[in-house]
Image (cartoon, rainbow, N blue to C red; front, top):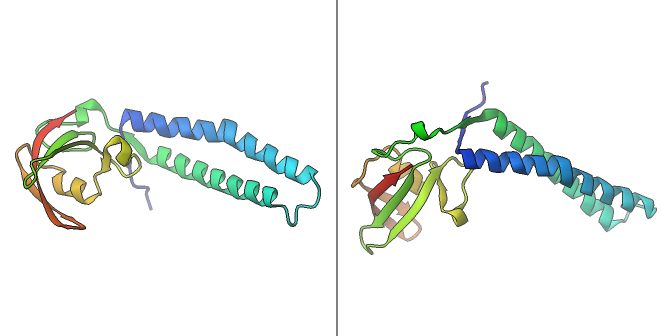
Length: 158
């Protein structure tokens, strides 16, 4: 079975590469040192420090594997791939809530880059799925916890 491509912006790709490098070059060594110190203290059968360090080591190794897999599957979204006539991965979109007239701005990214604090939403999210491929001035309805929200696409930028 072939692996599914994961589309990443240049910024998202760099962030994942930086995280992988940090885990491999710094975090691995730090946790190995914690394990070594816990072993030096003697009996590790009831050592919470040893258990914590081993759990952190397992988490780090799992994250390294996940990042390596993501990077193997990564395909960079080039500026030429992003259109301004229709919403696509990498698009910066301004939506207006039809009822409240409030505007929200965010960037459509793959699930590997999703970060609500940075206003990056997944193309697989309810809003992302509703607007992907739509042109400016389109109205979409999105199922939200409070019911159905209606949005108009105000602008699409790279």
